[in-house]
Length: 234
Ligand SMILES: Nc1ncnc2c1ncn2[C@@H]1O[C@H](COP(=O)(O)OP(=O)(O)OP(=O)(O)O)[C@@H](O)[C@H]1O
Ligand SMILES: [Mg+2]
Image 1 (spheres, helix red, strand yellow):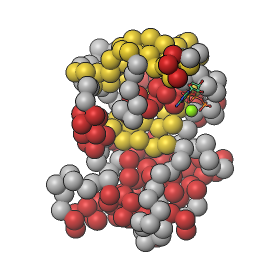
Image 2: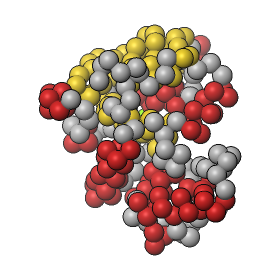
Image 3: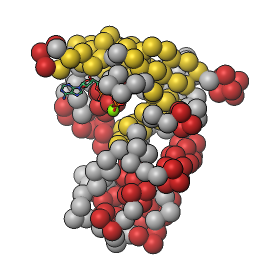
C-alpha cells in the first residue's frame, strides 16, 4: 500500500489563524493512498477539523502544499472540480438544503456533471435505496431523523463516485444505534467502491475500525500507525 502513488498528500502544511496567534496545524506531512481507511483522532482543539477542511479544499494552508495525485492543487477552481468529481464530504452537521426533499438533495450533487435529469433522479433513488431510505424520498430534511439525514448526506457524498471520502465526526450528533448504522454503511460503501476514507472521530470503538490510525496533537502528527491485523491482510 505504501508504494501506491498517494491520492492526496499534504507537504509541510501549516494553518495559522488570527495573524499567527493561533497555530492550528504545524508542518503536517500526510499522504493518503488510494483505498486506504484512515482514522484521525486527537484531543479537542488539536487541529483535526482544520486538517479535514484543508484536505477538502474548503480552507487553505498558510504555508505548505496539498497535492492531488502528485500535482499541487493551487486554484479554487481546481478544488471545486475535485469536490465535484473526486472528493466526497460528510460532516457532523448534515448540511442538507432544507427546502429540497431527500431525493432532490442527492440529485443536486450531480448538477452540472452532464448527466441527464432523468438519469440523475434514477441514480439519486438508487443511492437512497442503498442507504435504506427508499421510503423517504420525498421527505424534507426537517421530517427526517438525525440518522436519516446523515444517510441522505452519505448518499449525496458518494453520488459522483468519489475516490476519497472525508468525514468529520459523522456520528457526532447521533445516538449510538444511528451512529452504528451510519458507520456500517460507510464501511460497506467503502469496501464496495474501493474509495479511500478519512474519518475523524472521538469514539474509540469507531477509531478501532480504521486500518491506519493517525493521532493529531497540538497541530502535529503525534503518531501514525497501521493496525497490525490490517497489515497482515495486505
Ligand atoms: N476560524 C478560526 N479562527 C481562529 N481559530 C480557529 C479557527 N478555526 C479553528 N481555530 C482554532 O484552531 C485550533 C484547531 O481547531 P480544530 O477545529 O481544527 O480542532 P479539532 O481537533 O477539530 O477540535 P474538536 O475535536 O473540538 O472538533 C483550535 O485552537 C481552534 O480554536
Ligand atoms: Mg473538529
